Length: 101
Image 1 (tube, rainbow, N blue to C red):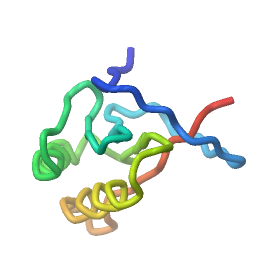
Image 2: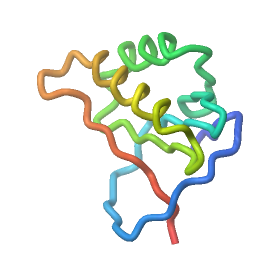
Image 3: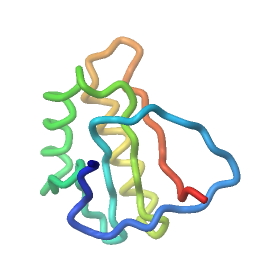
Image 4: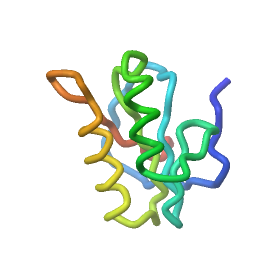
């Protein structure tokens, strides 16, 4: 069973679809900029970075599930800071989840 964030996230629709294998961690972003990795809310971006760094070996692709009304700047900050924390030479692979039909 997948852990859910402590807030509601409504994913955007998409005309394209790419399948990813089931992942251990999902990063959620709410409309008001709150961030959660699965059911664990991250009080700051720094906390998110530390979580990603300490679990990097368990993350092949970081799936971001941002609410369709989340501020673009917050989403970009999350992506950039997640990438910066990666020690992988090829970098951390990131994908965005969208509404399933």
